[in-house]
Image (tube, rainbow, N blue to C red):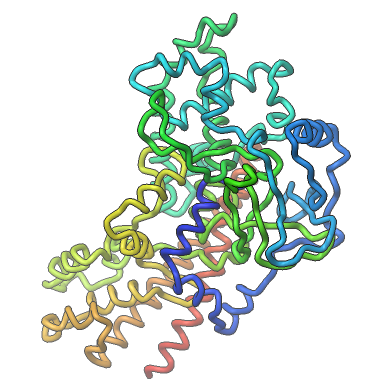
Length: 495
């Protein structure tokens, strides 16, 4: 399931540079062992699905569009679900898949279709995203009459992105993620409501009332399909569409590739061959599952945008708000307001995620990052106050050191922000406070897991959704326990 942000990871890696490279090279005991674990399933836990009718029809449909594949086989894996298996050994640099332009579903496809005249006449112009959503809904409604039926038949009928979950399940998420999920759902709903006028203009195309075709559930399905499965492919701006970046392409068959955080590939549209191509940078044995990396995303991002949690994700972190820090500080500190103001002024207070503020897929956000005056700083400030596999982040410890400054040390706040040691007392206080906050988070996580366990017994219809959220909390508990061990060792070294 290769969406826009997966290929945009090529751009993101250029911005992160040595940070990502060094992070993967680090080796620190338990943390290192977890990072080196392979995200591939065992030989005995896969079943080929190439004999199934939907895949026979899909391959036939793709062959008619000049696509031939001799490297991959649709397979169901116990750990990752449906994916693609290598039918021969693959070497670094080898071409995994080359999907002809005729197989891709883009806004060019939509504009050349029966919807083109309606889109061209509508003002103000609709967005590329809405054009694709409209086409997907219409073609899915056409059923057997749709020329895209073989592809539509293998698409998920439902998604597990947070925008699709029940509100009472979303309320069980960690607070930062819960806020983002609620914002995203509101934005998607707003986009649907604002699109009703355009949908109504299509009535002459259908005998059925358009409200019965372009309803919210159908729109949500189409939005999730685009958000989770498109590859990054930049198109020239079309006058009939809004100025929002047109960077989407649905890529049948290719989008069966699953995510592994430790994998790197080279993926792009080849202008010479007119194919979307993916080359592996690592080797694969025969019958292994092939992976791609959607980007250096933590589990909050993966769950929000893709609807799954990656086990032992090296990019994951537990986010800490300024409010959480203050809750554990002495209330009699007369300089607290000044300290908080300094943290806000220097970018320590905002948990900024690279997630669309307009309810649009992640690729558009990446495009805007590329246009930012200082994209490196733009990205860096998203890595804020966290507990991670290496313990508390530098920014978290720095924030705690500033908050723990005594009245006679407050004038040294600039040195703290520059990473200088002010005093042994300040170092010790910040470590004690960090351990205290980490322990508090561990207890909160255990409480959340107990609540979810109870709900799974009471709400059997929500078991799958609850398990998804439970997996996230379990990962966060593991991560917090690793951080607690690191902090314990750090504390012992200072005493």
